[in-house]
Amino acid sequence: MIEDFQSIFVFTITAKDVIANILVAMFCGFFIAFLYKYTYTGLNYSRAFTVSLIMLTMITAIVIMVIGNNLARAFGMVGAMSIIRFRTAVKDASDIMFIFFSLTIGLASGVKLYSIAILGSLIIGAVYFIISKMDFALPQRREFLMQITTREDMEAENPFGKILSKYCGKLKLVNVKTLGEEHNQLLEFSFYITLKDESKGHLMVKEIKKIKGVEQTNLFFDETS
Image (cartoon, rainbow, N blue to C red):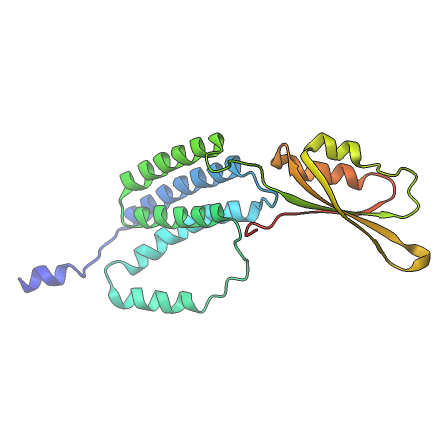
């Protein structure tokens, strides 16, 4: 009876198991990263974050292998992780979901539950892909704040109107104010807009910046609003 109880805390793993666990985590991590890349619809896509999803899955698998059934290691790992300061704010709820997705699959890979890791990745990935394409949670388009700063001596009164009409579903001018000194004044136009295709917002910004007389263009969206 005592020997059976002690065996619970014995965790043996071979080099073959380590390689297999890391490889499964890596392939699942690539799948998660590709899913994130091809379903992302925001304006702040980060290549570094996409790569981090792959590495996070693999590192989590290694962490769970290091911990094994050792309770002291588990507490030691928690203490070590608590000193890390994460300075990158995660504003998008889908980013948090993908981080948790990677952690979970990494945990499954680390304890040799390959069927759960692989099937879990495929099933959850398929469901998320279908939901993202259906725009299930988007009953209406999001509203953005567009700010355009121009020189006061521009020839055309509204030279960026055609570009805004091309990319925007709705457009409302909410504010016009002057900036700078009296002899070198700038005009700042503020619009509330909805985009026909949010993935092309950066293209609209680039086109407006090319207009002669436009000094600065900013597109804002607050997820909490």
